[in-house]
Image 1 (cartoon, rainbow, N blue to C red):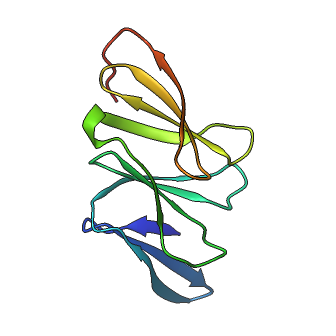
Image 2 (image 1 turned 45 degrees about the vertical axis):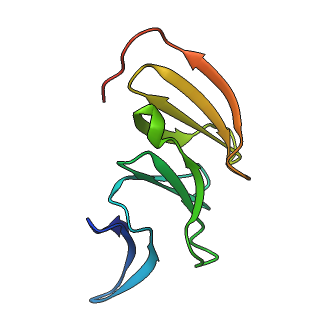
Image 3 (image 1 turned 180 degrees about the vertical axis):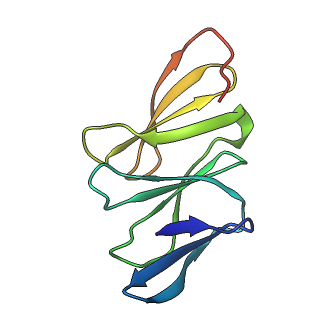
Length: 119
């Protein structure tokens, strides 16, 4: 079970039989608003309230890598664009839907919905 603390710490809660272990995986120092697993469960997107998206690969147990920072665009949410784990889609309050590369955070495409969006 992966969860985040209010301070921006990603934790792993491993339960086996009647025993458990808590492991700190990453500290991004920003409150995490959502955790989204890729369709094949190899990557985890960490989305912050400030509009920053990080990638964490549980099998590699490394640090979370900052993919993109959309803090200037009133960012609402992000998710994997399937099939695969190569792209991320985000949406802003102003109705901008954006596609990003998860390899290096490169902006790829934009679509304006023409309406304000609420979650």
